[in-house]
Image (cartoon, rainbow, N blue to C red; front, side, top):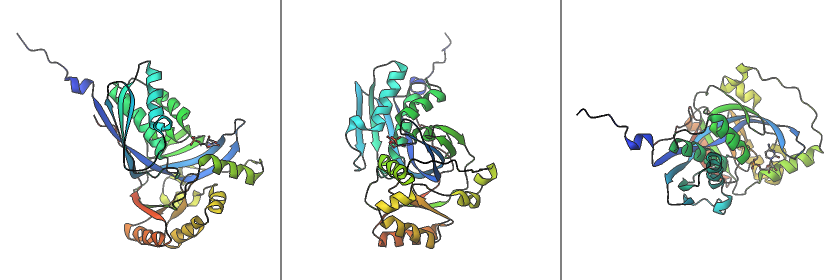
Length: 306
Ligand code: C5P
């Protein structure tokens, strides 16, 4: 009797899926308006970095269990965005979770680098791969924005994207050639909610429309992006953490093409043409007392590995 070809079980239903969860920086971050509920409408350019956490999901006994490595304090598990993402995923597919989440943290927390959001997006992507791509991308994006403003970017598939709203309206862009990046952290955290509150106080509730035009060519080269590079949080966050002002000045003086706060801080980043200039800047910032990470801009987003 002829043998019938049988699909390998491990191909059809993986038991474990792993994916890198990259950090992000914002090459442009403009706060456009305050919504009625208190949230702010943004115009921003997200760029993913090679600095990344590692997320793996594996079938477990029952519930959602979190296993952490990397020694970065991310608070209690029930508030962890990766755990909440898994909870939302299982609520959406109507199943009880029986899953182990393995999270290796390398991205500093509360630093404006989107680490928690990226972990959440990686959990959604990995769980979807574990469940045979059950949910369409639109549903994942919707779950993403319910978890946090930066999550949809990490689901959009491109390492570079222009975004509006809270970050849920996205235009993926062709990646730019990889550049050397320096991320520096002052050792003091900045809460996103506080940073928005301080910008609101500074502006006295007035958000006059500011005319701006971004033509596609403005996002097609590093030179052009450098001309658009701005972060509206800079005045309030550098006021709160004064060493950031010196650090940004040092980064710019040492040859950074772009030097900005990462998101709402408290870390900042520089984009450099070459590794030597970047490494010289890293030494200077370490002398100022900052902790430094060396990375590159990403040319593509990693896909979940079964
Ligand atoms: O989305 P995420 O959890 O990072 O936001 C943290 C806080 O930052 C929100 O609770 C809100 O107070 C503020 N925020 C805002 N406008 C945004 C994003 C965040 O006011 N677009």
